[in-house]
Image (cartoon, rainbow, N blue to C red; front, side, top):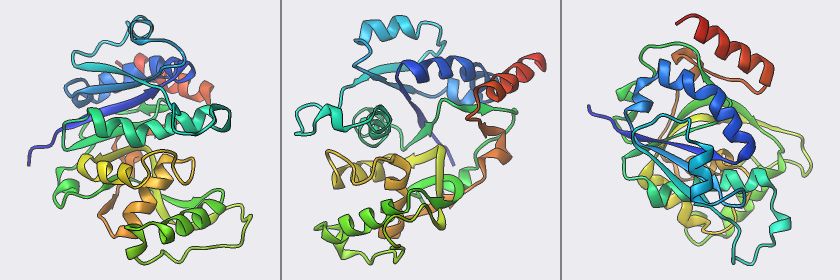
Length: 254
């Protein structure tokens, strides 16, 4: 089975610096990323397209595309009401729908390090065209997001036709334990993602792209494949020092 994808990365100034750190590991260990289209969704508030081209001139990829993300803008949402994190996570819901042409796109966070070479995805995962392929995860925090999603979907003209997940919890719960996904590295079905974006064309019901995508797939009964990406030469490292150490270890091992 042939398989093609576009890698999608969201960049603001802070995450651009992280990308510069981890990009050499992706290129060295996962050559399929260098051989596939790369979409860089860049924060328009930091600079225009020319500014971002200069900022990313170190990124050696033959088929890269820079697009600007400027949201919210004219949607009746006050900019001060939206955090930078929510702005950039929302980009993963809407930007790929417009710019990705491949059957799947790979959402990858800039704190994700490629730790080993070798095969890192199985074409069999995609045999039944699942909505999402990502590592399993065991909870949602804060728990109120589940309540908000269930209530929003119940009111939605289309999603209300599907049964609720039955995960509602007491308001204020710190976390809800249940099966879901972690999207630090996640393959998303492009056609499905366009449908997902259409359900909430402006602000998402919760400020979390992976929670939103997982919830929609689960409520609709769409295909989800759970694969532990750390078993395929990847690691999500939030600690800057540890991430730098891993990158240096990889460089020393060339």
